[in-house]
Length: 102
Image (cartoon, rainbow, N blue to C red; front, side, top):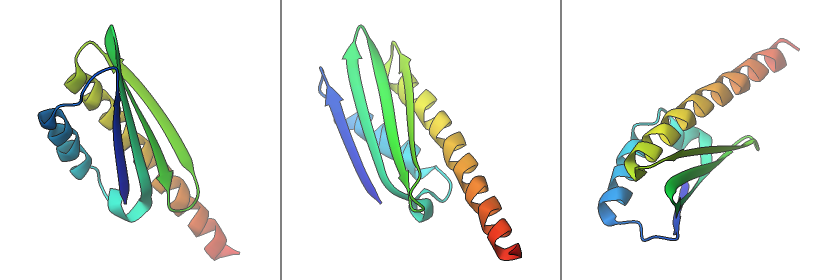
């Protein structure tokens, strides 16, 4: 799995990068389902956290969150990313079941 992290209009400190990596590590089965995780953090009055996730089966998802504090924005983003991964996994399993029946 490829993980790319970029910061716009500020420097992402090592502790924030470590915080993000710990959060990513908690995502269920992310290594098995995701090819790329692309993060972009922008600071302009508040922090905007965006993630683009590319799944192994060709689906792409984009999630965006914002907060006045970077770690809070990361928390919100990871929560939404977790829900997105679970939803896409369920869709893929559903499609697999349908294909098995035919």
